[in-house]
Amino acid sequence: MRLAPYLALQALIAIVFVLLLRQPQPEPPASLRLTAFDLRESGSERAVTLPHFTASRFAMHDPPVYTTRFSEPDDPRAWSVLLPRFTNGVEVAVNGVAILDSRRDPAANRPDRNTPEIAVIPASLLHKGDNVLSIRLFVWGPLTGYLDPVYLGPDEVLRRVYDKRIRRFITLPVVFSAWQAILAVILTIMWLMRRHERAYGVLAAAMAIGAVQAFLPTPMEPSAFSRLNATLIASAPIEGALFLTFAILFFEGTWPRYGWLIFAPGLLVVVVGLFGGQPLVRSMFVWVGVPTVGLCLSAMAIVVARAVLRRQDIASLMLGCAATIALTCWVSDILGVLQVIDNGRIFVSRLSYSALLVAIGAGLTWRFARALNEVDSFASNMVTLVREAEDKLKASFAREEQRARAAALALERTRLMRDLHDGLGGQLVSIVALSERDNAGAPIGEAARAALKDLRLVIDAMDDIGGDLMLALGSWRERATAQLRPHDMTLHWQTLTPQGLPVHPELRPWHVIQIVRLLDEALTNAIKHAGARRITVTIETLTDPAQGDYGCITIADDGNGFALAPDGAAAAGASSARGLRNMKSRAARCGATLELASDAGGTRVKLVLPRRFPDGDAAG
Image (cartoon, rainbow, N blue to C red; front, side):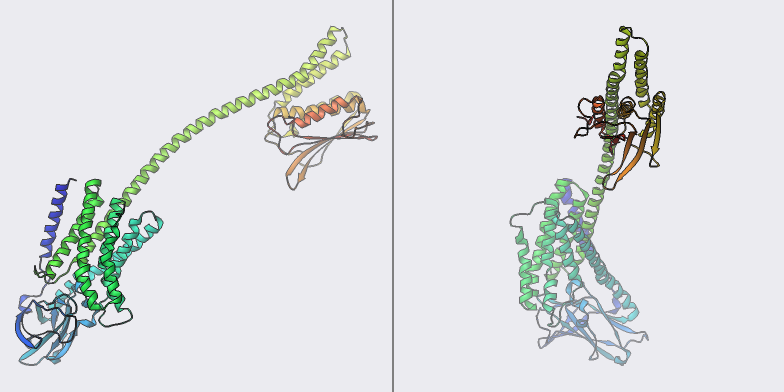
């Protein structure tokens, strides 16, 4: 929006509200209106016509008295006296008996509340002929006293008008003030959750001050809280400065260097209210506080106008329109106080703050809704990005898994090739060498059987045993039984625990080959060197409370035994020394531990399996 259309819109809003303010307020029929009164003031008496202004004063003694006469009504219905508007307080008497004193109603003592008053005339006070109606007008403060035309008539007729005015000038402001208090609580919570947004805290403070002002009565007599009440009621300039501060922080984002000066008039009024008398604080409020409020509203309108031209958003435009409404109402009240226009002393500035509330609430709601839309959009984009990233990660994971599978397959092939080379390759070389020497018979046959055995071992190791080493040991048991049978040796198999050995998901074929070859080496040593008649294989699962379960395989024979070196190896020169070194090397490659014991009663080889088999060659 450009500047010219924006100013035209604000001018149109101001004109519309001026026309609305000029609309007449609810009034009873004109036939019930009393306008001709005699005024007795300062020792003199004269005839006046209501509405009427009287001089300002700060004392309630010797108030001006308005007197008129009326005849006893012929209507049997109850009659009342209605005072639509007055400032500051009234006492109504019929035939010298007071029937109404507004000073007893705290809500009626504040000029900004536009409170009407109504009183039923007791039938016992009326008599035939003329009756006297007198109104004492109490004025305290710098404003001139004011009395609107008085209505005298049936209570049910006047009561309807009275109720309409109460709803318009009492109930509606109370509703808006309650809304203001609720909004202050909400803004305080928002500020506590988002401390970096100071505008919310400032606006909450302004709302809280306004809500407190709306519910405070004007102190009539000195009391423990009369000074505080008067000070809080006169704190409107601080409220206006806080509204301006909110606009600056919310739309400009930066606080001007000398911005604190806008609080100086309000603080001056507060200091006077706390340490001065009520007449002084009322004068300070009228001559300092009220102009400060208008200055703050004007400055806020300028700040919001700049925001509208720069931001081009609904929130700024709504707040700008509300600032124009509040400023228009403030100008109308000032012109009414100065008696430039006749507005019946109806003050609407406090009620116009409701327009600011609506605009601020709508603006913050719009901003919140926009933030939610941005969050939803961001969340939607993030979901899309996360899905794309997830797809990329899945593809990358699949590629890495394929590479890992290929690397593992290559490693297994390398290990199997090494095992074939070390086992089957050596046996084939022996067969070739024996055949070239023309040594037919048993040596070549034994070498061929050893090669076939090694080939079967490699093939068996390639079976998927699911990490259960007991399956591989079952095949080894059959081969071992067949190997011992030609030597008249028996195999005794013992499983001391129900599950045998623990299941190792990480078990690989090359682990199985190393373990089975180690067992073959132990069995071969027993056959060749021990002279044993019985081989006992014990399988069990041992439990360590600190580290968990682990497997143990023991091969024991009843042979002659042999001497051991101090380090547990075979003694130097023993024929089994090389075989024992190979067994320990194979155990180390699997992360296992080999324990050897030998005496006259036989030899015992104990293989303690690891709790978790290594991925690589643990011998390194």
